[in-house]
Length: 240
Image 1 (cartoon, rainbow, N blue to C red):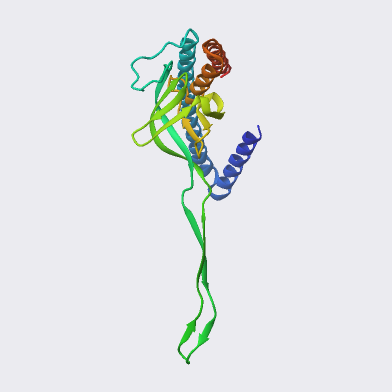
Image 2: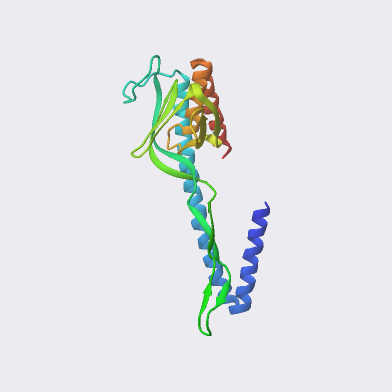
């Protein structure tokens, strides 16, 4: 509400300045420009919302399919452990890690200056510089495929691979609707994250949560979680 009021005030101020500078002709041209920009923005938002709804509806359908049973996927290339089975595979997944973009250096020349002759001076001392790493940022380091099993989650990309053993899982941090999930496991120095749009598929965060649910509480509990999540998504779509 506050943002809308601020926007209206700013537009009113723009029209007032246009009237002061060039009169009603300028106001007319400004009105056409603002109106055209608003129409384009609304059409873009409508298209974006429709695309999101279609993707979310597809994810709800996938979750309902899983809620009927986590049937093993046999055509995965993953070498499986004893009693391990793959229940979901999706592509277009980002691998993210927190990395520093570099270092910053500050400093200058320090020391005393000595006169040797009328036109020559010698300075003593040297360069004094301080170098420190810049704050770490979430950085996309690869794009590939994520494989979800009842025992682990595996990312495979052209440049990196990562494995999260669910028996060593320390915690999950999942964003709304699972578009990103950060997972920490014992033995790993850094917390890596998976991210990706639904695109009609189950988002990485929700799939990771289902894998953890199967490992900790079994298939039946994971099936109930999948159905509950699908119902929540349907409610979100209806509310839009």
